[in-house]
Image (cartoon, rainbow, N blue to C red; front, side):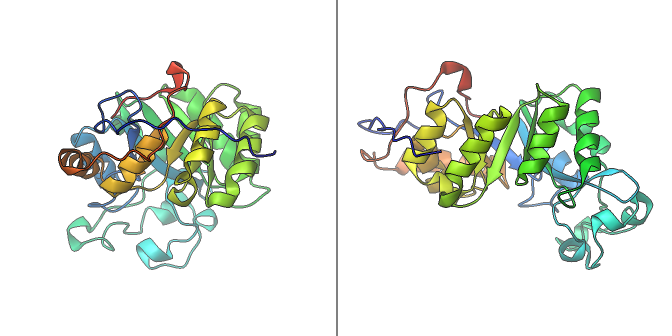
Length: 288
């Protein structure tokens, strides 16, 4: 796919964050992971208590077919054990402490199963499940996620860095929104080509990719949502908001929102920041 050049419209000045419908949705990345151990019930409970309206987490399959909420392929960073999630049963995984690495106050937090998160996304506007397959031939994880989605009513978004995961999910489920995860400015063409091929609703670039306003404008003009990972800095959040992104994954929704409000009160108008205004209204998301 060749680059489609889009000339962004330049506003005279940027509106305050949240003052227009272009303000992106703030998405709790692995729960309230800045202050709680990531992907644990403590993190999701705290985020829910603070009123989040969108959440993201990682899911993979245990050896005996349980969908567990965990980011890394191995347990090493979180639990100190070198084992792989895919090689251990749910009974074995449930014995590991997933909280003490963050602080002793979280001693006893364990790795949750996906089913345990359901009560914490009631009333949310977005539940982003990032699917992590153990390899290119791992059909079971995708099938388990598709089955879970069929059995639950929620505003799901299924995302993955693995193209074959998204292709397989789309073959099983032609309706649930899908987002293509990618890193780096060199990934835009491939991500947009995959999105078009599978009928994705959006792309989820990292900050290094989303910093390019022309590429964000290209994706938005093509009708795709653009949710950016991971943003904890108010200045960067403002910059990406001006580019027209639709969502920001952040480790602390309340803190980022507050920091942006402070920045709003102090910042100088920037007449060089692009803002995409010709986006179909159905794709716009108000602030969380």
